Amino acid sequence: MVIPGFDGMLSYTIRTPFQFQFQGSAMKTKDSSIINKRSQASVLLLALCVSASSAAWAGRPLGTDDAGTTPQGSCQLEAWHEASDASSHTLVLAPACGLTETVELGADYSLPHPQTDVRAAAGLALKWVPARWQMDTGAGALNFGLKFSMGRAQPAAADWQATESAVLILASLTLNDAWSLHANLGPAHDHGSETRATRFNLALSWVPHTRWQLFAETQTNDRREIFGETVNAAGVRWWWIQDRLGLDLTRSQAAGAEIGWSAGFGWYGIGL
Image (tube, rainbow, N blue to C red; front, top):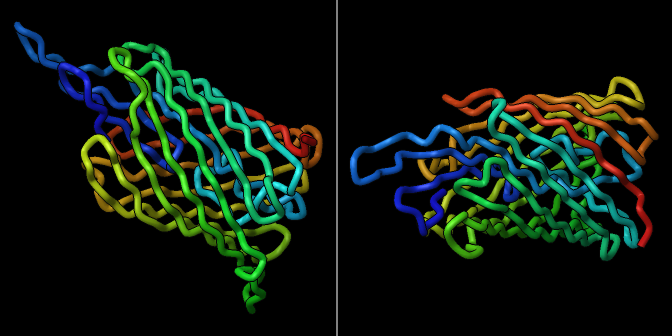
């Protein structure tokens, strides 16, 4: 994805509608062309949906969203620090609230370091999971939903600019109390290059104990030259206070990129 307004070109990958990985590209000067290798930072808005009644949900630390919403009148706050090397990192704050039993509104604000190319990134997401789109199957409970999202970024030398907007179909299959499968599919629009692509995310979650969640996921698209390479990730969450305060650690890597690590927390069940 391209952000205009630079002497060269700054590209970044959105792993989900609100998860960015900034990548320096060739920057030309009067005397020579240099490769900017300093900014590789991942910015996540969150998979903002926690199903309070289920132990197997796909919120943070997953990048793949689930077909569930925060309960009406309840909010959550997720925050994390993500780094791919010692010189670049990103701090992210991502709140979300349940507006009704089927509608959730989420936001994020991200601060990368260094801020040579991009000062900040932000996004909004609205998720709708109608009760009539929930069904029982022979394999388990299957839920569907829709997520509408848009992102913006503030280049160091320009004002805030639209980056990507997307509409994703969400699907969650709860196999049992321990295993669940989550998938996202839908179109995305890169405003910088006016390019459209189809995004696909898939995650498998395992809860071996009520205090532990493990997951593996992949996030890809069909226009990788604009929206970035496929990202594979794995992670773990530990509930310090059951279903209220969780700590997590994730490891992710895109093709040809350095390994990224993130550590964060999620605070849930905050009353309005």
